[in-house]
Image (cartoon, rainbow, N blue to C red; front, side):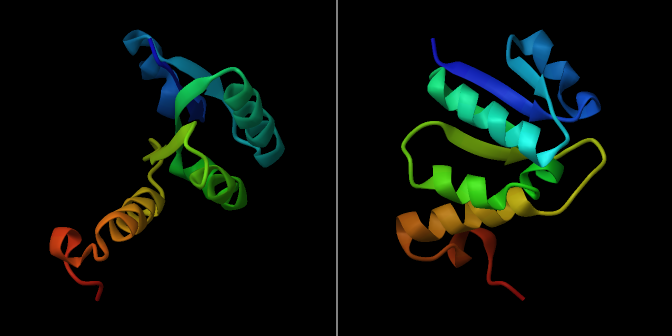
Length: 108
């Protein structure tokens, strides 16, 4: 079975335990970077990370984007946040098919 986990603030990720997903509470950049590096070495294939934490480590996300595993996917935090997840999804679609406009509409 694939190893899946989620990283973020407690309020945003505590419910994932009920789904059998490993959770790692982190709100600081350095702690998050160490956690991701440890998870990658320990063969986690999917790492979900809340947007508010992902915004602090965009350079690390870019590094892992070129790697086949782990797949690092941003998710919304309870406190809200930006649209980083949608930005990454749009970029992935553009890389795959050349344009994301037919799926998401043109940027305004």
